[in-house]
Length: 140
Length: 140
DNA sequence: TATTGTTATACTCTATAACTATA
DNA sequence: TATAGTTATAGAGTATAACAATA
Image (cartoon, rainbow over all chains, first blue to last red; front, side, top):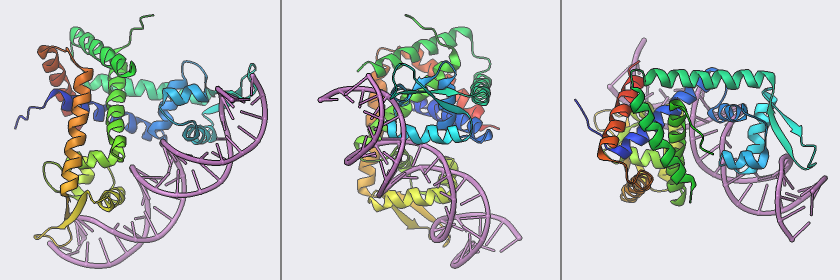
């Protein structure tokens, strides 16, 4: 029973797998995908609401609630911006850093497991393809 | 400013792109991603709630509401199963077939556009990789 | 008893519109 | 006036638990 699929369908299927892995890992930590994604995004550095909303493709008002819920869990904090009293930056707490890193590592680990045995050349190819597609998608 | 990304990160990024394209196309038709996904899934044939819930990784109770909303929009109908009076199959209406096909085609078209210029060999490679990863993810 | 699907309930996610405070 | 962020509101998505009807 070997069903052949097309290229586009492969992309969609891959997206489902990634989404599900991310969802599973998040869920195991008592987080939603969105909450976990927020934590992962903040690992690098604190980010303000307006920029976060662009990065996550969310309206600012939607973000307010998401941040509220993660803040209530003690994983992030609103830190005031000294240069602009209207603004704040969302920063991970110590526990948030832990959860964010663990989530990221676990997702990475599981995806690596699924891709086990894939040659370095093939990986590089996929990275190249994705980088190109991603750039095209953001360009317009 | 050329930032190099890892293989796993590429997978995650690709998933985001696909999700977003799917979301954009759905939205343009006044549908949510989940509703559009349901329509696309039903293009092949009508499916019962239990099987749908496995295919979409959703609890049956969550599915009831989703089907309700899509049915309210006149895109699907609950058809009774003659061999089992407990069961029903969710079938696309004529309008549902149209929307499902158009959504599928538009998503395909936009993803193809993003992957324009990619060689046949590279496409085949990606299909192979995804098929393998997808199979591993479902296996356990 | 097991299975199919629904209902009740409680959160979460999301957008739109209107708002406050600061720039 | 424009920008940063919040509030109010409404609808959609989701899970858990309890349920009805049928197998």
